[in-house]
Length: 248
Image: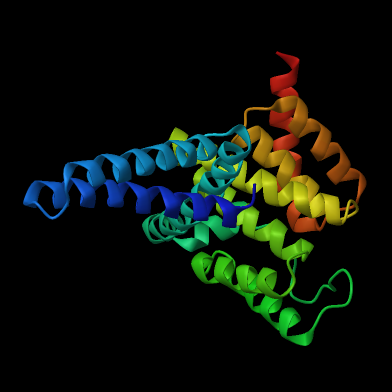
């Protein structure tokens, strides 16, 4: 069942329930006789039961769950953006740049042909990473609005979101893991030879998902694809931690 059909059923349910209440009110003030009231109310109740039955069908529940998941993911990104700003203000962007920087440098070329406007947005986003992370995420989101399959934007927006969630509570970590993993896996599906996505997915799986085996798999692919030096230097340290976890 489509989202449109589900919305229509919800509207019908609300309409019928309101109609039943109006019948009760009309009977109470004497605007409706008992026979008409019983006939109309029975009809409305039967129709309402049928609509509710259709809403609760397995197909409709699946659509509803998909909608809730999408809404949850949207709330996650908004919450993480707020958290990101708080962390950057609290500890200073310089520390993050020194310890966590992994963005591709602005002089490097992009994969595939894209519009000049998209290239400009990406260039600004790279320059803005960790200096103004919210602005960087907004820029990556603008790129994805024009080019939904842009691998770099998918990868680095996910990385920014995952990076700051490491020090957050368990619920934020869980949501960040789901969001970042989804974008990074999509980036890999689009371009399996883009090393950055493999590198960051390995880190996300280890740091947020506690999955050393899955992390090692992605980090091995990352190393084999000659990632940028800025990314490799950080990944090398993570590999040692992952290997230590696997040896236990």
